[in-house]
Length: 325
Image (cartoon, rainbow, N blue to C red):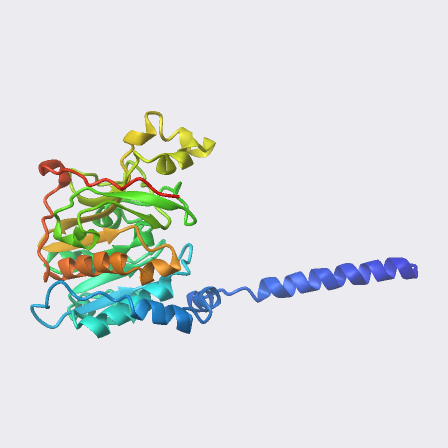
């Protein structure tokens, strides 16, 4: 081997060795992945903005309420999770509507442990895989009178647990409406107490919005849809011109139904879900936080809301105003 070959070999060895070392350093456990993904967020500035936008509770709790906030991910990890956790901590502290415990280990899902809580909130959890005993504990919890709340990626869960998918209302099938876009939303039920935050008007908001696998989505025959995308606006229809989405929308895209928030009764209990919450600073938006807080209070049983399926109600939607550029 001449000296040039030796030099080249050494260079390749150095490059390969560095790449191998980096691969070995990749986080493996959930705790390592979370720490790597979140870093020191939210920053002090973000915390201040969140804390100054906490709404007042619509109702005083009927008794001391306790919410279990679960934030583990087996799939994609949203950077907004710690922002949501902090916002929920601030809501609890500033409103006294409830207290919270943060958890990211499946062991919390036992009937004995859940007896201490009034609601479970899934904050952007993805691909959760509770075992059969844990699944039973969650279903018994809500069916016997407690509450479930899901934020954003809570609908990207339970892929091998059909009852869990049905409980949440559907499962993720992509997001044509990406996080960088500002989208038009209509109030499907303007008079519902869970929509009071929006003062009877449709609105625009920057966030990522899902659509759901058709065979999984519970639909308006089982859900009370609160918010949906206002597809009459060309900005909302534009993403569907992408070739990968065209096949899923064979008809008029302005007629497409894209629910965003909904509620329902589950046995003796209640569920509230909103797809808002992908973007970090969604959790500093006072209007959205009011919607979430009202949803939590509904799930807890402190705020009454009409949860009769949309198909059984006579509703007139409030559309979004024309967007001024």
